[in-house]
Image 1 (tube, rainbow, N blue to C red):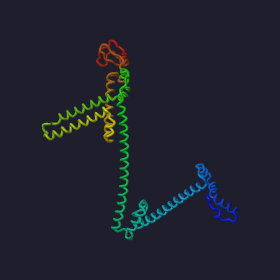
Image 2 (tube, rainbow, N blue to C red):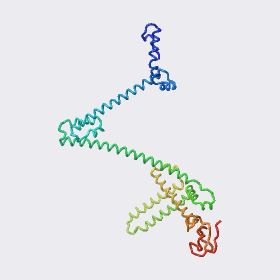
Image 3 (cartoon, rainbow, N blue to C red):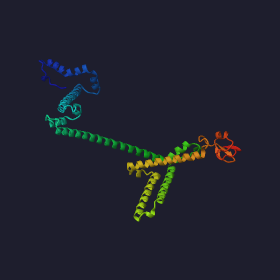
Image 4 (cartoon, helix red, strand yellow):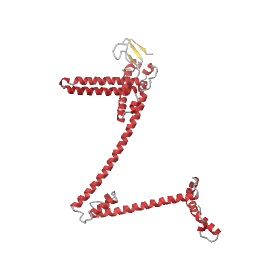
Length: 345
C-alpha cells in the first residue's frame, strides 16, 4: 500500500510516518483481532494485507447488497399485504388476502386499479374478478403441464438409453462362443444349462429359426382360416403385400439376431433397439424353458420330481431315483414287477 507521506497530516516527518503506520494497519489489526481464523486462512492462500482488505471489502459489499435486497423484498411483501387486505375489505371477505398473496405486485396493482369503484358487489366487477382469477389459474396450470411434459420426456430418454445399453450388452453376451465342457456333467446340472444358454448364440439362432417357422405357420393358418373365395382381387393383393412385409420384417429381425452387426444397430432408433431387446429377451427365455423341460424329462425322477434318475428297473427299463424305488415292488410308470435294479454310473 503506497501512500505519499505528504498527504498525511502530522507536523514533522517522524510524526507523518507514525500517522501513516496507524492508518495503514488499523484495518488489518481489526481483522486480526475480530477474525483471526479468516486472516490466517487468507494468509495461507498467499494473499498480502492489501489483498486481504480488498477481499473483505468485496464481502462486505455483498453482505450489504443482500441486506438491501432482503429489505426491499420485505417492503414489497408489506405493500402486497396492504393491497390484498384492501381488496379483501372491498369485496366484504369474499376474497381473502391470503389467496391474493401469490400474485405479483403488478397484477395486484392492476386488480386494485380495475376495481376502484366502491360498488364492488356489482355483477360487472364480480365477473371481472372471476375472469382475472380464471386467467391466473390457467397460466399456473399451463406452467405445471409444461414442466410435467419436460419431466416425462427426460424420463423417456433415460429409459431408452438404459434399454439400448442393456441391449448392446445382451447382444455382446450372445455372440460368445460355446464352451467345450463335459456334456454329461452339464446334463446333470440344470444351472449350467441355463448359464450356457445365455452365452450361446447358436441356441439363440436356433430358437429364432423356430420362431420364424412358427410365425410363418401362424400366417399359413391365418390364410387357411380366411375365406379367400369371398375376397376380391384387389383385397387379395393387399393381403399378399401385408404378409410379404411381415415376413420381410421377421427376416430382418432374424438377421440382426444372427449377425449382431454393430454398424447396423447404430443406425436404428431407440424404439427399434428397445423392441429388438425385448424380442431377444423373449427368445432367450424360451431357450431356457426348452432346455429346462428337456432336462427334467430326461434326467429328473418323474415320481418325486426332485432328485435325478440314478437307477434303472429290469425288465421294463424305466429309470427313477433309488429313494423312490426303495418302497415300491412295481414300476411306478408301467406297474410291472421289479426283478432287479441297476444303478446308473
